[in-house]
Structures are given as structure tokens and as C-alpha cells.
Image 1 (cartoon, rainbow, N blue to C red):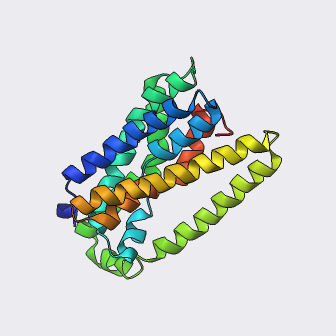
Image 2: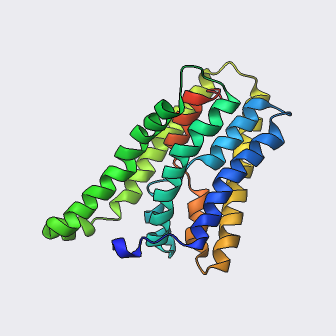
Length: 223
């Protein structure tokens, strides 16, 4: 129910980690290797995956809480990325407004449009809404297929890359570490608000496709 989609103090803490953690990851790593730093930053600042609510529900968490944070984190990313990324990789031809609209154009069809359509069905076409609710778990399998495709694309780009293997290994390791830390801090904060599963998935499960697009568009594509 839309009434359940209420921002809570928990969501504020998670949003602070999404932005503060991304900046911290870059500042800690950029002197060591700029590309690795960019990869780690993208892993943190990237918003929550659109399918995370389904996974959270299967794990016994609050789908409503996760959906609320998914909406907030995507809006935050659309605002923060155009502000932060140009400082890392300057693009003179990309203004804040252009970058904001470009990110929003990626987020809207994936997240906001389906959300508004679902509300439309709920209030104006209740029979169709009730019918579709029987198949809400289909999102899990759609996510699995999408993830497989992304893994294939990533593997292909790595195989065709001319970059040093050591750099690629370091980027992978940075991604692993940031992933584990986000799950850890999400669950720790969530435990304080009796919402451990939802908070862990909110920080740890990312919109991988959007992360890749942001890195290719605004940063070093290898990141």
C-alpha cells in the first residue's frame, strides 16, 4: 500500500552512507589508483536495484521499507552523481542539468514509470491489479535473467580489454570489499531499527546496469 511507503530515520542513515561512503572510498583509493577508486565509488553511490524489494520479501524482510529506500536512493543518485562525478572526471560539455536529465531518463522507465502504472492499476483497474499480484514473484526470475546478461556483457568487455590484468583484479577486489562492507553496515544499522534484512539489501544490492552506464558515461569506462 502507498500508505506503507514512509521515509524513516533508517533511510536517512542509509542515504548518508550512500553519499559519504562513495566519497570516502574515492578519497582513500585515488592516490593508490584512480581507476580502482572510481570503481569503488560507483559501487557505493549506485542506487538500490529495482528488483531488491522482491529479493527482500523472499528473505523475510519488509518490501515496503525497501521500496521506499529504492525510490529515495535513485532520486539521490540522480542529484548527487552530476555534482560529484564531474569533479572526478571533468566533462566540459556536460552540465548539471544535462547529466541530471540523462540519469533520470535511465531511472524513470526502470523505476518511476512502473511505480506510477502500478498505482494507476491499483486504484482504477483493480481487477487487472489483482490478477498481476498473483505473478509478483516473476520479478525475481526477470532479475536473474537480466543479471546473467550483465555478467555476460561484463565478461566480454574484460576479455576484449587491453588493460593490465593487475588493475582489473584490483577493481574486482575493490568491488568485493565495498559490497561486503555495505551489506555489513546495512545490517548493523538495520538491526538498531528492527529492519536488518531490508537495510542490508538496500545498501548491498545495487542497480548493476545503471552502475555500468554511469561509469561508462561519466568516468573511465574500465572502472
